[in-house]
Image 1: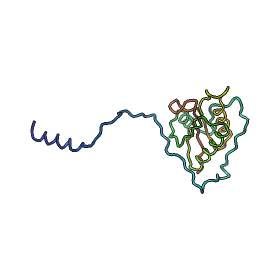
Image 2: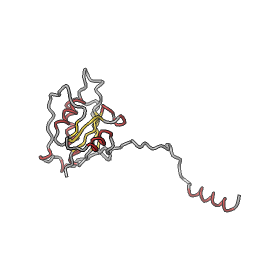
Image 3: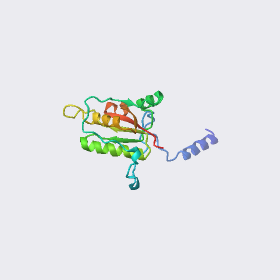
Image 4: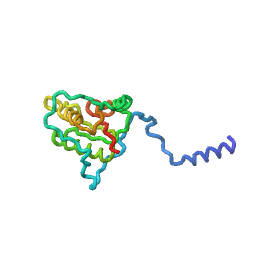
Length: 175
């Protein structure tokens, strides 16, 4: 071995000193992480009256649509929402919540999202396997979303985000 190649090896080893090998060398291209949790300041507590949300009725119909898209929403955007290709701005997990508590959390969550100008939400409501009889939270969430003027679309999430136990929600732009 020549002196130059030995010097090259020594300088290379010096340059990579302190470098650790990767634990995993694969990247999940489909993994989505919420941008950040939405925070509401005390000054923003009241929602603008023109963007008010309708309250949730106590009567939940037996048949609710699994998905709904506003008629003005382009087909390409509908496909992106259905396929989960849009970045999720925030997530709400309602697992294990009672109906009244879930209604309050859902209302507050959507109000905060509107104030923070979030567009794409993921609401995890579960599939209703542990409910007595039929699912309670999923139909309540779908029914409430169908009544809201600020919701442009909702549909079941992709398997990676919870499947039929979660819903993608796409909100209007308030700017």
